[in-house]
Image (tube, rainbow, N blue to C red; front, side, top):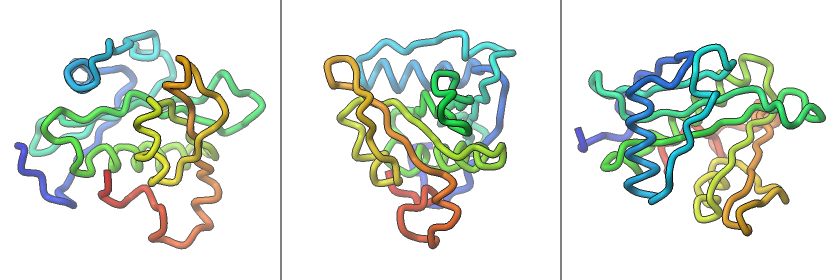
Length: 170
């Protein structure tokens, strides 16, 4: 399974809860690689209003993320949070996370969402910046983590190619 070719079909399914497969991917990606304890919370349960995406290659779950309307920013209608983007170790760096992020953004746009927000470790900012996200002043954990946002409405008027989230860079 570690021989993923660029553009290989990634089947993405949506769920109203974090499946066992999604939880396993998050545990593997966040604990083994980042040496951090993953945070499972109420957003992982059915009925939370959160959409969980799970990506499959050849029938095996290999990537996950979740998104939800941002309850902490009522001043920014149409703002959604994309969180817990994770790819199984061994398949990272092959564009799967980028494809999951693009799928989440596409679904958010379909819901009328205009802003995608992600929180990330400062050392991961470059990945999101290459995909069109911009850091905000909202930093925490001593500046080691913070928020980045992407204007999805602006993306619709932008010419295809430059900074589009559909590329297989990661």
